[in-house]
Length: 99
Image (cartoon, rainbow, N blue to C red; front, side):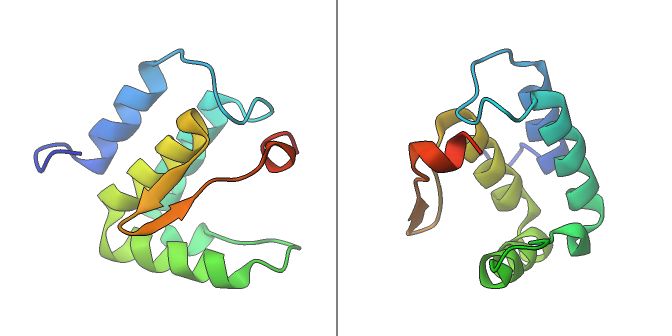
């Protein structure tokens, strides 16, 4: 992300791409809408009924402090199947991608 690319611009670019997703059961327009919602309301980042409150809290902090980094992370994860926030690299396995 360049310094001139805003989080909303990143989401707009993402919305207009038709590339195959690393998470085939998630539709691009749903991810786009949820990204926009969470960008406006970061407290909606929620682990739901899972035991992932730590990662959810971490991503909430990133979304609040550096929304561009959060948006890029989510887009990379969706499109490439892996993403990084600084030195923290995440690469879910095939089973996770097909939930």
